[in-house]
Length: 263
Ligand code: PGA
Image (cartoon, helix red, strand yellow):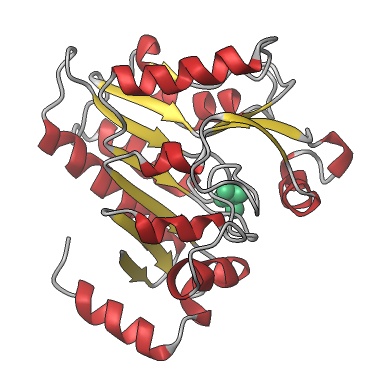
């Protein structure tokens, strides 16, 4: 696992956006062979999306041949609902770049047939040759996508019930009213994420320090589903100093030294 420690949120956001652009351009995607990018929602990636839009406007990248798969969606929210992840993605990213609508993949929170929806999502990923780079965030309880504590580390796309603490954390997007936060979601599984060629997780802020500590120094456990990243051949955590504040000084020194000459 790589752990890249940057001074603050802005530096993390810019670094990840530049890395995404580097990976897309290196892949030289075509219409027949698009670059497949996994994408997160939430507070953490907003800075990265802003920077990706800047890089697009400055002609550093084109999204014409990029296909995206989002991690999750609330059950019961229409794409036009401002709290839905469809809406989030449209507002924060898709409408600002030249991505083609047929290349955008998101789970349908209004589906009547969850099983079919989840199976066809997995099939669509496979059909495009798998995800090249999955960018994600992490919850304070260590969830990756919406794989809450005790999710199977081999899980696939499915329905999940959110924990009270995740609904509490996300209430800030719902007028601070936890009762408005849906209690069920569709989410890709830990196994789905692990199938990606590379997984890059952004972790910023003091409130994520415990999750980061478990991800890097803890045992692989379904209690902190982020810890599955330790089993990934190309797992990368990019974090700020605050999130890294509960790592041991030896761990921090090791990764800082290890990364000093890298991208
Ligand atoms: P956040 O959410 O980026 O809003 O902190 C991350 C997550 O819950 O996975």
